[in-house]
Image 1 (tube, rainbow, N blue to C red):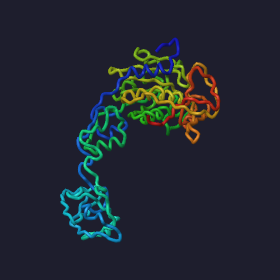
Image 2: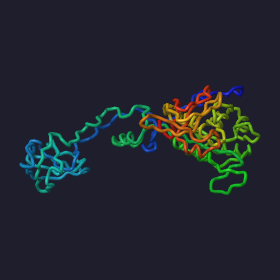
Image 3: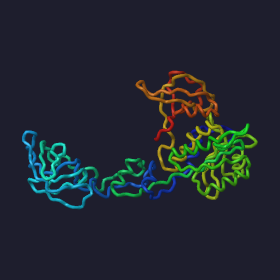
Length: 411
């Protein structure tokens, strides 16, 4: 990354995304692939339904036998058998008889209509039918949903609950997809303490690693939160080396600015495979990206202020994870909304302003939340969106249209 000028956000995103490749796909159990793209085109190996079956609890009949049934002139038929879902026996229906049948049970051979139990007296030995069905009514015919050879899923389709249900319904127990990226999250700083422990007068609780690990999981990755790493270069280097064995991506927070104890920048700069620089954005200006270890594991280094760290995750890490999972688009789409109040923006920086986004009868609207400080985690927790102000804009007027990243939405 050049150090004589600030990179744009787009440049840094592209640098990361273009340097990564999707993880290699393999067959996975269905539930493990939830939210991932399928890496094969899947055709139906069977019909759905695979046999004619009843859509109702009732009686399987010959249509001609009951066509005249009414409340005033009911039809009486002997019940010669019963069919329940999952039974293996086969029944052939003779004209002038009925078979008691349950929802999902195979329709007896010869039957061409189902009389719902509500249209009968519910008889067991014989049945009184007071309303006539239409021919083929309440019969689910073989192949009426899916036929053998039909394309169920195209390569690249996202495997949601409905798609996984479809695959299970045709007997698939596994599906070929890319694995979830394993993301190691590391926070650095001698001032950090674990939640649940005592604080000193100059220490703070480590919020970043929890926030980033949660964000990685929400994005579909497997997140490993590493304990706090101090500002000692040797300790950081050892901790990083230990974690590479289980990492497809490493994300650090803190230690990337220009201070005397910025251990991440100090250690990784010596490797020559990680570049550091500044991006024209606020918050989140100091950034780093590169590769570490024998397997060239990608690493994205984020600033330590909580808001800067979270915004940087949204802007840079999320596209990296989606690239590794083979999901498109890589970047969260922006929407336009009416800004309820005006505010100023730093010159020559793409500004990310915490906000509340909503939609009502008048359309999409957004309201800034709190101040611009990079430490204001309380304001961040109240936000569900980020207003994105271009670098050339220094003032946003109330009532104007703005671009918005709506958080916590799948895309």
